[in-house]
Length: 364
Ligand SMILES: Cc1ncc(COP(=O)(O)O)c(C=O)c1O
Image (cartoon, rainbow, N blue to C red):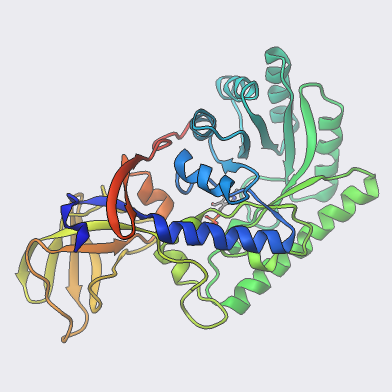
């Protein structure tokens, strides 16, 4: 196969499949009348972000200031940092970035808002802020609509920041297994968002931006008031998302698997055990076990930092050869990508060039 020339383990990106995923989500958002602001924490690559924007995305989301810096350097002009940015160094960096691009971020506390505003005033810039609402996720955000309105009022009255609306992302509903169950989760989230919207309407405060939703929930949130969707994983997919199912069955088939790890069979100690050259340092484990897409009937398990072990689950499953290269689907794409320096990019199914995972390790 044409992948033979790639040394392993390698993170491989199928550009054609990614392009179809980007086009499909862009088309969905366009038809729904909702802007798309894909989350760049998935791919950490300005090259991917530029393709999403070329297909119609209004900009990207980032989780960290360091990711945003890489995106701005890579030519992205409009960024929402979907995380509360706290600490003098970080807010100063974010304010500095606002000289180069349109920057927004989220707030959920007066102290965080005031510190951000002070940094913006010192830098001579204005940053748009979204008040983060907790719709039941239990991470950051304000759960009480009245308190969210109060923080918005403070933002409106504070120099250096501009109140732009709400962030309403609920991470816990994204991977609910079963389409109907996931829809019910998203509808509960939508109902909670409606309480926030009602409180803002009653206070006479406009919310021009309501940003949220992910790959698992976006299709159930088109009429909930969102003005932009933050979906990330759709661009590549991973095994975790594939397993959440859609209305046709147990596999989530909206998007294609565009990312995999290429690994080599380095040892076959017995007919029921195959050892691959990919361990914890190549594939993340937080999302469960990866899967060997070229070798059905074998279950993936880890054998250490640099070893992956396939164990036979089906007596009739094919036994590969030593040196054979196998495609492994990561369980969780985001955290697997962050383990790699570069993507080996396929076009027409053939290796072309390597792209850096430019925001790899940008955790500050
Ligand atoms: C705030 C925020 N928005 C959007 C996303 C994207 O979600 P997904 O990759 O599930 O599409 C995430 C993912 O964790 C997130 O934390």
